[in-house]
Image (cartoon, rainbow, N blue to C red):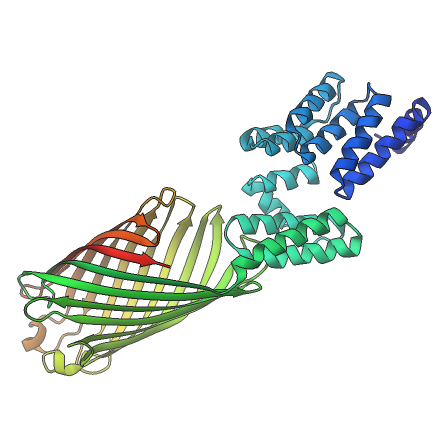
Length: 478
């Protein structure tokens, strides 16, 4: 509608019912400031003076929806439609969203254009609308402020409170400069609700398992032996603005009732991730490390120690999907006294390309890895390629099922010592493993666990092994 036509309509409304026009103006002003009850009161008074106005019927429906009177809001929308108002898609979507009918609300928005429609669609979870709004993140003025608020809510819904808090605070400061009380209050309330999620979090798990280990010493023939496992894992995670970090410590003691095979595994790892922007689907850069130590004889005898770490780059591919490229350096130091009198120490590099998915019910990843190990002394150089697939299924927290498949093809050589590996100058090894873990809640923090793993290596005759582990027990989660 052109400016002249708008003035004519404004004059016609004011001349036909000055009281109705004043009440409508007061109602819209109250609605913009978040005073919903006053807005409903003024707009109802305006409708009594202007009963044939579809515009007022639409605006009253919006005010009633915000006040929580959804039945009356729907009736007012039907009245606006009967009066022939041409632009009801946004109002219908707002009322339907308030009723919890998300799919119907998104369907109503399909024919709507404009910034308000895109903002509502993004709020309702339309990923295309979210990406479209993210491209407007650097805009100034009221629209830029509202974009930050919508993206902040989206980040909070998708489990990224650090990014949500940064966006909400930016929206709050922008609304304060612009004098927009409605957006200011919404951004402030969101920031306050996010505070508990931004405090440092400590997670602790303790598991006691009993079962059997087949071939715990990687002998040629597997022998089943009763075994027990005590596992303790603690994690501390936190956020500072857009930066997130975590440190994890893992201790696992395995023991068998007869013969050798006891192992103590010690592991400490950490990561730090920094996104390139506040957009939820922004790429991020991170670094991670892991320190490992394996011992036997209840910590008396060191078997091997290791250190690995390096950077990674993560890029969003689609809603809930991202790709990651990681490069790591690896150093492993073996205790040569336990390894047939020769030193197998090595340094190496790893490059991993992976695709990840996360959703409330399931998560998983598929990874392709290349490795290059360089022997420090008596061992052999190795080149290899591996494929890993892992998934976790958890329907509503009632139970969870997690499993994985790992394969690795390595070429060792040149081999120079016939007494160790044979006369061939090269040796190929195909190693694969499968593991499965089932958890089910029992009471409070207590969960029942059932897990199993099988590992097999195929190489030159006389140098193959197979092993397995099966266990059941209890785990406490705090």
